[in-house]
Length: 153
Image (tube, rainbow, N blue to C red):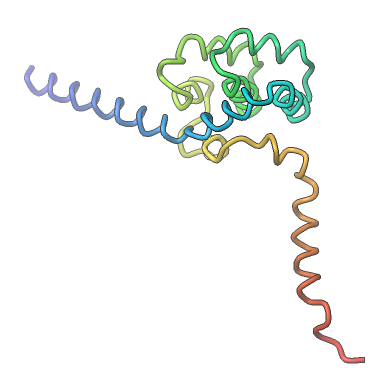
């Protein structure tokens, strides 16, 4: 019986430590909240553009969450987990004190997966419109670097 209690205590400590470590992976949300609070209409427009959604859906999510950056996480988790924003909000409400890592796991996103790594990297609101341009910019840099070198005429 003593062994069982010790094992349960160790397991509890591991779960707590893992949850705390995962929570630190989402520190970028603080900066996103600051940006969103400084320019709320711009933030809403960026959400609408990035996730191809209307203002009514953004308002519905913002009305059910604590911080503006959490709205981004609701839409991003919905996208990555193939769940509706409404489903993500329900999971958020039930688990918000446990953190986004736990919420992601509840939605089927496993720690260590490519989806989980994508979440940890931060938001992509500013990068969303550059998706097609990124590859061509890289090519231009290579081509610019090669100009004036090479063939002699």
